[in-house]
Image (cartoon, rainbow, N blue to C red; front, side):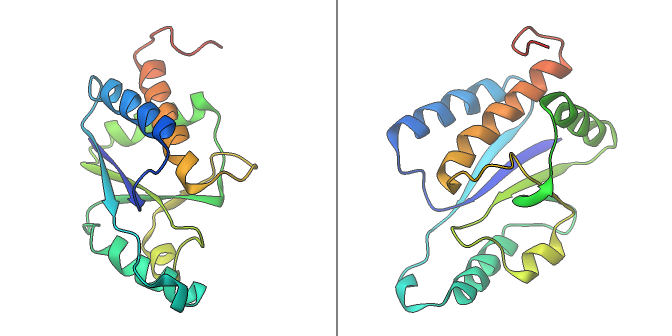
Length: 157
C-alpha cells in the first residue's frame, strides 16, 4: 500500500523540514511514502475564508483518485493511541488497499466538498497544532506505527 501526505503550502521552518525529511527517509524502509504539496493560494487576502477553503479544496480534489482512501487530519476526527493507529494502518494494508492519502488542510480547514469526499477523519490531539507542525507529528506517528507493526523497539509500551 502506498501512503501519501497531501499538504497545502511548503514547510517554512528549517527545523520542521529537517525532522520531516528524517522521518520520510526512515519510512521508505517500510512502505512507499510520498508528500504531495499544493501551492499556497495567491492573493488570498482578497478572498473570504470560505472562498479560500473552496479553492484549496478544488486543488486537493485534483490530486485524489476515485480509488484512494482519504483520511482528513481534522480537529474533530477520531483519536487513536499510537498502537491504535498502527492497528488501523495494518488493517488497511491487509485489506488490499492500494493507496491511502492523509490530507492536511490550510489554516481555515477543509471545504464541504473535501469532507464529502473523505472516508474518515483523524485528530492527532485535542490540542491545536499549526498546520506546519502537524506535518512533522504525522510523519513521526506513521513511522512509529510501522515500527510497532514490525515489533521494533522504537515504541515503548
